[in-house]
Image (cartoon, rainbow, N blue to C red):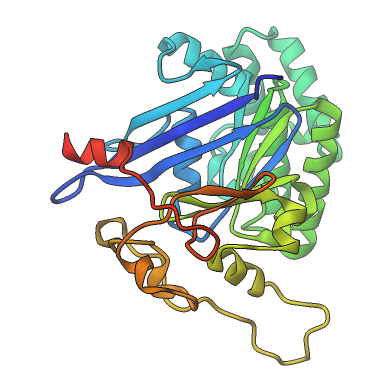
Length: 337
């Protein structure tokens, strides 16, 4: 069997709490194959971005990765030297950060910020770095790239800045690109352009993409598989086709119901999921979604279900589809320490 490009096993990331550590990422496990696009979905505060930052060992202090394993090409990223980790970031794993308006340094030109990546990794000299940067800007659809490479970020629109971020992410031909909400700040037309661009470049370069979003419609356009997160836990994982055809978890069903339908009546109110994501310090005893779930049972409020594969590759954490209870794991061990 071919080794996955990225394997995450029981990942736990915690932040200090008043009484005990709070798990922002709570026992997450997933795999990503070479050339695959995996969508990581959930509302704000569900742990998607923190999972990505944990992969790259970029969790902001006082947070820390407290348990689990992240294997990239079979290499445990928690055990590599700082020098090796520095090489992996940018060269082998790159990240498109969430907000293009603030991810670029406003006092340096676009060209300076692109060439800096190549120079920092000793991938080219100054002349070659500039040539490759201009070429990449052309590939992401920025016209007059030879001139625009000398412009500053404020001289670009939001969509153009996002294209610059994509160019920066792909400049070193990484094996894995982590795209954190790459279309959130853009209007619908520009969103569609950016998604088409990402899919085109992914086919050209062969890079795998971990696409973080709260929008299942975005996932349907570009991804092959999808994982749904809630309060730091995986609650459902399947192919995109399986998820749309037969969503199993009530949370996933709620997210899909929130999407507007072409067949819907005019002026019809969109579906909403009642309540909000509970704060980490006030999670319920059993299933974290129990207080918002329209199909909640008595057992849900006292015991958390396990994440179980119920059909070929389709996993769900819900008593509606199995009766297995989650066993104490790394999070509980951290809290007890």
